[in-house]
Image (cartoon, rainbow, N blue to C red):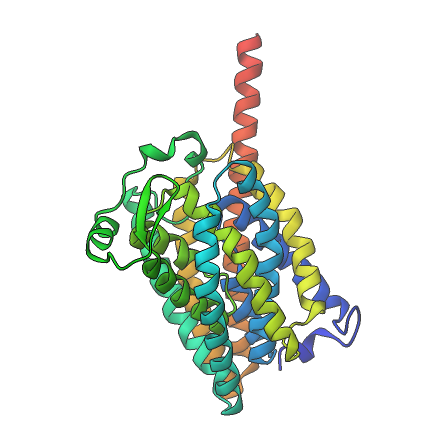
Length: 352
């Protein structure tokens, strides 16, 4: 219903108005991705659902978007030596199976006419839960809610293995045992279980799964933070690629959506990455957690509007999803510009 308000066919079947919307949204998502190290697929898919795209198209196009952004980011982490390819190879196996299970579930629910509603409810629970956790950790100053921007400055041996991971490593000793970067030794079955669970999440919701998989690698497997970040992105290249291919086979990838999103995201990611060297992330993380919470509310409102056939509620939900992301991206840009101005004033004062 909402998509009919935004014009007719244009580039790859997408109207000029929609193209502009997707480029702008991709730009915002790119800023968030470059700054926090988290992709924006958890915002893209629900936004597409609220624009009345079929669930397979929303999920498949979200996965294709994830694939494109992950390729760019993985190359950067490879240069920093933060990718454990052995860990990544094992996870790819479990993730591939999980994605197929998640994808089959989407198409089964679609045949019953339930896919959009079930996926939206799952997003409400997931965004609300992760948003609450990020906001809580940010307010406590625990550093939650994204990538540690100083991770590359620390030696891998300096990272303390969480107690939960130590307990799992001592308890689950089922061969084969694998030694990972940072002298972490863990059962390959633990890695596979984590990969399968997050693969199901990726295939069902069209997300990279990084905001779940990365903490899982840290707290369940026990790998150092920078290795978890780099390896997660490497794994997303394959999971996103495989998921995109599988959905594409069923016509679930719309290039008229993916191309403008990636174009905007590529520009935004450069801005977001540059901002990490200037902005203190702790304050912004509170906004990031709030964005996820608002996203959960927005998806809920949009789903209610869809159920009632009320385009106004659907529009409110869409505006909230995009608006929350825009506010956080604007906060990052504003803080960056302010910090640069302060630095310039201090330089001028010192010169005088």
